[in-house]
Length: 394
Image (cartoon, rainbow, N blue to C red; front, side):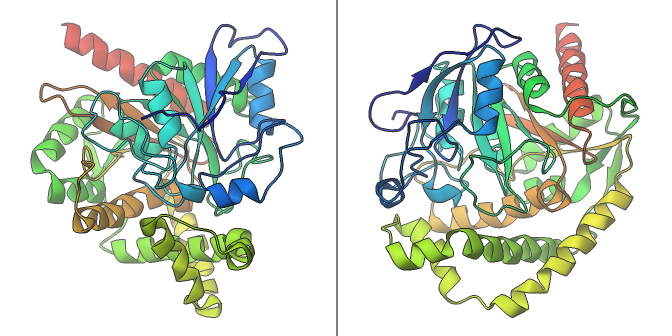
């Protein structure tokens, strides 16, 4: 199935020469490209909106750095999914594991990169929409610190969590894109990371689903330097999940609720049931969860010092099969959104690191740094990749 939106593939040449010369990129269909209507993965949204008058700021930055835009990619409807299936446009291929879903909602962007159609691609990540497809498709993926990259020209979903992220097949390309998109390093560069902690509750979530993979990933984390465990949720996983979901619903209602109620769009069955929650949730009780959001964010700031980094499985399962049952998908969501809530609620940068293994399934670890440590985290990702490669060659 194609990674790209139906119709002619939009292509735009760079407007300057720069560090991304010769690289081709695609953008998720939540991100504006001048002269093209952003469709949001839903035909009714596409039909009720007009062509973008200008590029999103992140697209402008890439074109000015020498990269060539080569297509817009399919997204799960209005970003409300982690699976990668689109009822209207189909499910983009997971090129290496075609029996499995590519992960969403930046499914098309991950598929385009994994297939080699482009060198890198932009996605968006709210509750895991870059992190999950990066893991499922065996890619490098980055969710930056919240607010590090402008959301100007990006269709909003839950703005207090939304970020623009990206995929690449190599850490060098991942870092090169970050060097263009991320804020320039300050005169007082961050100190290098000195302590790596294994997130015990995230490994426990993986162990509940895939104990063998959890052991493999834990051993891998230890070889990378994460020899001390840390319990982030302190046994209160449900509170983190509830906080994310309640605040997300508040944000979705504010950004998309009026359009949904007036346009009455046709959503695919699984997406329709998620948006239907907006009809029954109570705003006043939900608003109280914003205080919990600030509390948890402050706790993470206290827990995670400037030179600390968390190491954890990116996803609670290696893959989701295309024929996965509703119960399997439901359990995946519960665990994935909870694990992802660390970076999401904290506004922290997170990089997905892909690792191969002898049973031909993706294994992915993530590193999570303090807010604003994006550039240092990319350097650490490079170092860890070199360390792992060197160890395997010995």
